[in-house]
Amino acid sequence: MDKRFIYADNAATTAVSEEVLNAMMPHFREAYGNASSIYELGRNAQRDIENARAKVAKAIGADPNEIFFTSCGSESDNWAIKGTAERMAKKGKKHIITSVFEHHAVLHTTEYLEKQGFEVTYIPVDEKGLINPEDIRNAIREDTALVTIMYANNEIGTIQPIDEIAKICNEKKVLFHTDAVQAVGHVEIDVHRQGIDMLSLSGHKIHAQKGIGALYVRKGIALPNLIHGGGQERNKRAGTENVPAIVGLGVAIESACKNIAEKAEIITPRRNRLIDGILELPYTRLNGDRDKRLPGNLNISIEGIEGESLLLMLDMYGICASSGSACTSGSLDPSHVLLSIGLKHEIAHGSLRLSIEEDITDEDVDYILEVIPKVVDRLRSMSPVWEKMMKGESYE
Ligand SMILES: *Cc1c(COP(=O)(O)O)cnc(C)c1O
Image (cartoon, rainbow, N blue to C red; front, side):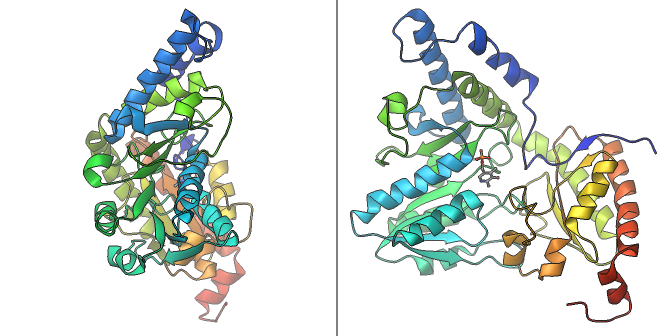
């Protein structure tokens, strides 16, 4: 077995594509103008930003003047949530609804707002990692300022019933924001048709660079600034525009959203082969609904091992994977997402997330399916927990 290098962690970040890099390059050394300057070099930068804005808008079914560039997906989430909270608090609405398994960019923001006197309802998810829209309907109150529910979960890849949730929010006249960082480029999105009021996206999950994101805010919603200063982004988000990154995001999102269905057709069978192959190991389970999930995501719990050891062993075989989310690895707390779908701590600890794209070949899949059982056998043979399990002893 020849060692390969396989990047199966695209939910953590992606490589900048050649196409994106080529589009960005002139903006560092030749087309470096400040978009606020009135001479041609500046005007060209402004024009290129607006072209990119049009591309982002088109990719999600928005109008260009509804798109604001930010520094990342986390900033977009913070802005949508804190901005709405600030705005609605003035109307006496200080209740926010979100879910228990959001990304920390959302959860830590709502926890911050709780300390500022807001009340937050955390909607549970079922054992398949799905939210029941009726739970949202039941949680909405007179003083609800915002519902924020992620489009697709970053760890277990489950795609939420966004259309139904948006419909309920529209009926109840409550603003609806979605963190779509994992969904953009993998799921068809049309914010106007779907009734989404605000949507966060990020560049580095779709082959643009790290440190660029965007927030869609439906026309008519006056979100207060998160960053104050100059008049950039129509006075809504100060700071000299990161032109290369913005241009790159435009190219990246256009490319990512061009052939979503075709990509899914290539990836899904390979993803399914990985799922079925790994589930042949005893004491394993797939986390998240099998069908309502991102085409490239699989998340499997493997009992009797620790996620971190598994990742290190896979790394020795050239496989980049993840266990829990990148933000929580390094800490010993099991993933809040895996706990939210009802996994016990020990089982949540031994989880593996692979997030693949269409560049993964059938040979890569073969290789992964050859490596994982070997590594798992090895780790289990050294594991006291596994030993106890096999003797039928309690190990909790
Ligand atoms: C990666 C990610 C974010 C954060 O985006 P950054 O650009 O890294 O700040 C937010 N939400 C979800 C679901 C993500 O996967």
